[in-house]
Image (tube, rainbow, N blue to C red; front, top):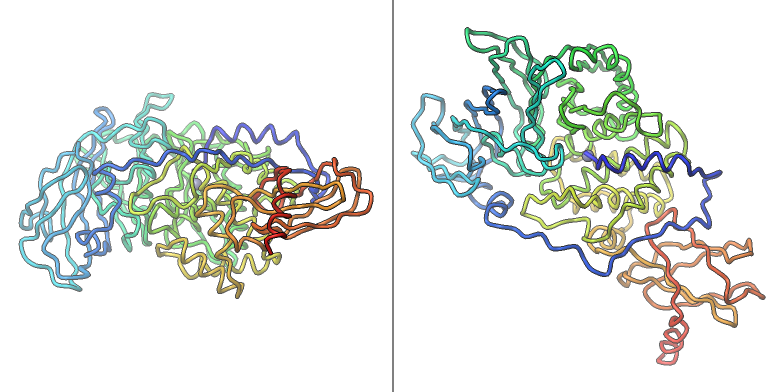
Length: 578
Ligand SMILES: [Zn+2]
């Protein structure tokens, strides 16, 4: 998801239009706050949730089976959850996770009738003691019966949790969003992003028999007893635990289908509240073009076997795998041309869902790549001016308060700082312009997608892909933009004898491959230099006035500019010291 409040600003950008791709002279200011953002504080709860300790590394989850009753009037839920896993070593005990305020009634081994397992709880961690040693390679299952009142989302989908609402006709309407918090706020699981099940089955039961419950994947069954109506959904692919979701409401289904680039048929079944059916039928058609363009850019849609649906949600949107939450009011809020939520969340099926990061420290690979995907989409469909407007808007929101790659082992995702989206996107844009060959750039994205889809990955593996596809070393670029806080600043000064003195600030020694194009005020001559952290000088055309302004083009790379009178002395000092 993206920061919704920013979207309003898109409209402001509509008033700015560039006449050509050449943006020379248009310098985009970079904010480089002197003070770094506050270091996040981690308590025992976040450490227990984020760290991969031996009691979590020892098993690989292969399947989640949820069988949960939803009680919208009481805002409670509960039932059985099966966690099936493969032992990676001999196991005596394991850690699973469940929000402390939810009550565990019992935990059984093998089946709901199996041996009762003992457990202890510290915050969300539930330490299960097995009644016998599980041998390496064995598949085993634990069945947890639990219930309670999960936290209510303060600001969904950002500050997440359960969302319990009523539609206009007073029917219950509910859902969950928990990317920031983790799925263990509402069901027991191994709540670590490095481990995804191979498949999942979700059965939701409700007493309100006129309503429906939608989840990810394919509808398997609807059954009914005297008390409940139940809806069973199956996901045939690996899935992030925070993507596992439900939507409860008075829905009606809208059927559609999409033909993929290889002629495959993707079954599309949207669900919207009944009064919105005709609006949605028309509006949701655009998702097929999103799918088409992303397939052209990155490769095949990842789950033809799970289908795709947009489900009207009681919050703005979320990338829930194959069952995207949609609450954007059926409008083309992106420049009057596209629905932002649909475009962004659909992109996540490739980057975020098919490719997921093993640690949220690298979440820019989900959010930054998806954000840049919007730019690539706009460029393909509407040309580079609109795409650049979009990118420019994002650039204004870069904060540079913390490095893009965050602390690892903490399940840390701070929705207040959007740099994982916007600086992440500008890192890719800078890389693309350094490569200066779009087919190689897209080859990187396609190769990365091909190599890591249905798996979890990391920034290191992405950099490895970049270096291997290009056969060059781009570590200097990623070190700067992902692991350093500040953006580079091009410092310059024109001396009375007509030299431009210049250097990079905030960069490492090897950050010296980015070209800085510039012109001098009242002169059409196009110059370019390759700064480094050392002061260099460049002889400008005869007659250049030393008081002139330098117009720096920073449209193809993320950096700022600043005049520094001391460069001349610094240059002379280093020159003398030689
Ligand atoms: Zn997103």
